[in-house]
Image (cartoon, rainbow, N blue to C red; front, side):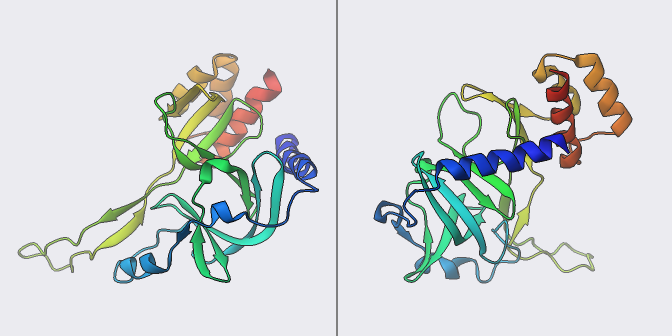
Length: 224
């Protein structure tokens, strides 16, 4: 509860920082009209989006500007943030200018591709205080499968499938490590090993339990 409050409080404080910002998206963001790409996935099963429908969200950019309650959605497959404008569906052409996006209470941040970073594109920020847990959502395209002899089931069509999220521990911009087990997460945190191990065992924390992972990180901050 304490750290849920911290996350809400962090969003509130960031909102205050951007309070007197320009309430519009600058033309330099309006670089990619997506009308020509919409039909490419019409005959493909599944969805590339985090949310199928556009949802009202808040956009923070350039360290000082904020645009409130604009229709947004994340295309996970293309790693593009889309918004609905009068001209049609647009994608942000300069996502590195985005500080954060808040949609349905979830915070998204953007990482540039670099040699130092083991992560790039849009990710969910699950804890406001570093070290933070990051979640990279993944959608992959799978081609139609050929029907095998004596197989009674119909082959799967061309499709997009949502894969398991990939988790990272974010200590600093130069220290972002992939988390592939609870044991590794505890090791990467570097302190309070015995307490965290006991907590994870008691609460049955696993990689299939993002809420449990967040609580484990929150418990680390309580101990620290």
